[in-house]
Length: 243
Image (cartoon, rainbow, N blue to C red; front, side):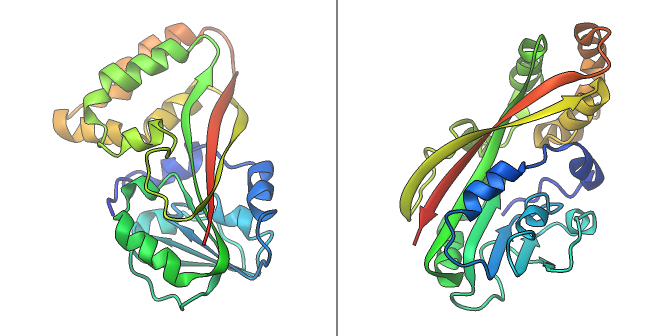
């Protein structure tokens, strides 16, 4: 499993899109029992903190200590530093296992073996992710930045997100993929902060010694105009399977 998100984990917690209640309710509605859930690659616990409203116990794991240090807290969430492919959890411990914007980084054969070991019979497995944000009047420039400016610095796994996990091996009873929208209001600083969390931006910085977001900042400011905030929509895809 790659660790692309230990650096600037505080920015990740602040600027990444937050999952809405309707997404969580859609997932939870398909779970027969709500005793225990494992949120894999939890990051700063954006999904785990929502699941904690429905489950008695939430186990949330990540390999990044800095992400876990910035994680959202609730009494029934237990955070631990563990790889997705090998954990200390018991056999058939979980009613639900979720992976948000992370499964494309895993060693899938080993991870799926761990899912099947720790998930209860008829338990639910959910992999979700999100696409580029959409902002009226800004989409072309964001796409230019994504494809041309930092495009060569994306890890190959990024393609799996672009394909909405359709090409991902999925050794479960596939219950289909559903789509949701995350609406929000962002300032220009919110957009620049979000772009700064991209793994390709960090790879660019490491390779070239300069920050591509800063290099594009004037273009973004000119295109943004006088608006204090703009409406932002992020498309979320949720692929669901059952043992």
